[in-house]
Image (cartoon, rainbow, N blue to C red):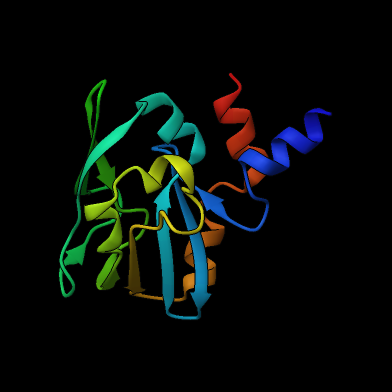
Amino acid sequence: MAYALFMSNIPADLNYTAEHEWVQVIDESTIRFGITDYAQDALGDIVFVSLPNVGDSLTAGGTCGEVESTKSVSDIYAPVSGEVIARNDAIETAPDTLNSDPYKNGWIVDVRVAGNASELAAALMDAAGYQALTSS
């Protein structure tokens, strides 16, 4: 039973940061990221999202946006360094998508990374590592 819960809340095919962002490798130079189910649950009802612009340079660990909920305002942290090549404008007009579908329609931005995307993602936590972080 716990295994099914683990798989539904923390997809095994993604990588994770300690700041509760997920990372999906799109191809050898591109990643997509968003906030995790754990993060959206802790935030509560999300009412506003501020995203970086296409062309912005991100620095791994640096802030690149904000998520505002009925409880608080939280920074979004870049999981990797690179250039924003696409952003999910739909979540600015429907920020509650981050609550209802954080891993699919709630993605935040696509980033062209400086280096190999798979190698960078591998340096992040896997699903088991993230499960250990969030259950402690």
